[in-house]
Length: 284
Image (tube, rainbow, N blue to C red; front, side, top):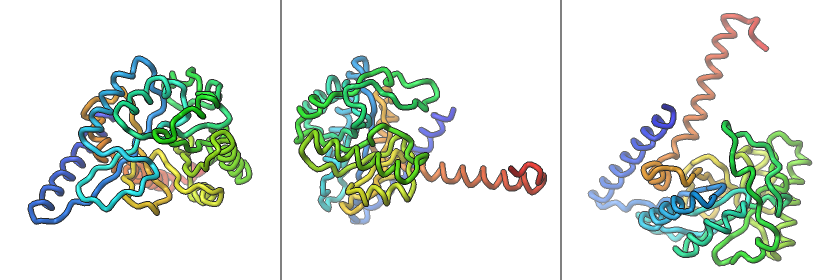
């Protein structure tokens, strides 16, 4: 029921967007370009075909770009960037061949301390993520990736929930990961994504101080086509997403979701406050 509601609201957003674009064209007004950043985790063998179909859809409906691209001031263009978190080996085996075949650039956010290992971090998924048993690519595999097709970003050293760490611990994760990846690849690492999507304003500031030029969240805010934007939202995608769901995500129609989360927190907080007003003994 929850998933159906999310899809229904996103469909409304999509229809409103298309209606607005139609009106703009009718009155001779240019439609601004849009940019959506997708992120995946694992692409196992059995999901390669579904992933390939999604990339075909992406090519038909949008223009794929590098994550650090300086987007031209085009009108009516839908730019899309494809990213992967964690650095699973199956990305090399099953995702990259499909991307290379279609000329789609991508960015891999790597956990530097997990290279050549299986994930050792906590799994917060409700049903257990099967990808937790898949190996992470090794250093040699990372070196062999073509920089023309694959850009590398940092995803910390050990994949902790950064908001639970002290400032010193968090800064260490940010710094050591970037340093290690630069040692392996002999090039600058400028991009970072937050494990579990957990971040706050302090972490964003520390990322800037540690030398990152852009950081990426797991909130599906629609980013601006602006090279100066530092904190960029992304939309989670899975090869199992149906065509309608993938199309809605590709179009940016899921961008309402973060605002719903904020609204929910405010409502819950207000309900708790009212409850405590009636029964002060409930106050922790």
